Image 1: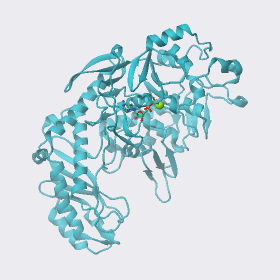
Image 2 (image 1 turned 135 degrees about the vertical axis):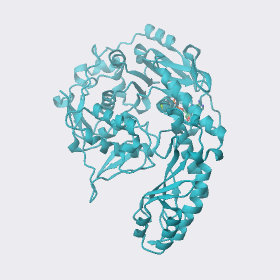
Image 3 (image 1 turned 180 degrees about the vertical axis):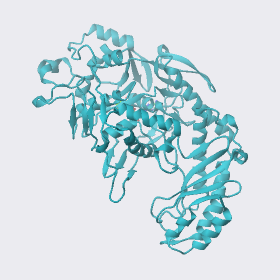
Image 4 (image 1 turned 45 degrees about the vertical axis):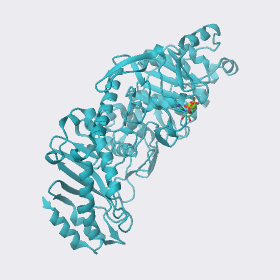
Length: 571
Ligand code: ADP
Ligand code: MG
């Protein structure tokens, strides 16, 4: 391995030369207390910044084994160190040192969630951080001496302040890993206790704003209080016994007046597949990891989905056993979103009337009288929701303030009043008894078959211009796959652009398993088997620091939304 002196000399030598000469510094260097590896050198000062790693031996870093002794702790520690590195880079990096991204040192910046990431790794022998540097230039002339300051003054300070145990705030660090460990423990208990979600008493669910996911602190914030009838106690390894609302499997309605906190509760449950940072308010809100938010998404494309359980005969006799469209309606998109989620193993559907197609959710008695069943292709969700649970063990939590017909099919009815939940199950059942719904059931006896599809690899083309593979993401909800844009704005559980980046590359990676025989579910499983075994690194030919973990359902959702996607049904 070359030494830091080699790098210093090299940077001095190329000062003032054309930008391409930076390619010479690619490689690994021994800096004494840590090593630096320049994995990728950018092509010009405006291009994506260069990728660099530092490795600090544990002899120097000295993180006690207990801070990463199990998966929960390890992921939380790595998340914590990423945040520290980010803060330190903000503090110590001078940033503007010339043209374009010159002078920048940065790392992935986590939000409210604690996600498994490739930004920092910790093991018994070292701590590794992966970050980016904008190698400095004036115009296209290398600013070698500025680069020296970045490598030999700023970087060591950043490493000092973020990757050495002795210099990090111990109390904060332990809190971070303990909270995550507790959340994982709660989530792991759900299944055996027959629950799909747990919301701890005192949790703070509302957010600052629709675009700011930090907890609401202004004005009156009502902490969560479970209704007594649903209150349970769960043990955690660090926080002791936590009390809160345990939502059992089955069909749960969340009702209540407008603006009383229904959607806020559902949103917190959607995010309950992730762990949260201390102070978020939702640290102890957990849901079944197979949860999926289902919504209407008119305009999306659909490829050969068997939506027969919800929609039969369309106008002009068009079949729905193998339904494709370039532009779905509200109801057909919601039907396809549901079936596609079931196809890859969803266990809990989270639905909000705010984002649902009315005609998918309900058809009341009067409408049944006016438009007879043989003229209406849609079997509304109300007539399928119980079968989903009975036939397929798929639970639903549904926010619906607008239709009491659902009382007939619910196991639990929770009413939000001034941001507090009340268990009104028996009242709702009494009302349903007293005022019999006159509507006819239209859903038949069984949910119906989920027809699996086999994805065809030739329908994916990652090529763009001269590049064989060009996959980029533009924000959390958009992937450019070759020349095609995948719109993920309806995939609402995605929270971090690094997830999106990983999904984009996972689509490409998944092509190796599409052999014309495997189903979409099998392909997704194989991709996840590899990620499980070898980490998110399998998705990239070189080490990158900006991947974050995602759900199987997200990968399938992205594939389903690629507009060139072709599949054939498994017969
Ligand atoms: P709904 O879906 O019942 O119409 P929302 O969940 O959208 O209501 O909430 C309405 C408003 O109340 C939002 O601005 C939300 O941030 C706020 N809110 C929700 N829960 C709470 C709470 N527990 N304390 C204070 N404000 C809350
Ligand atoms: Mg709402």
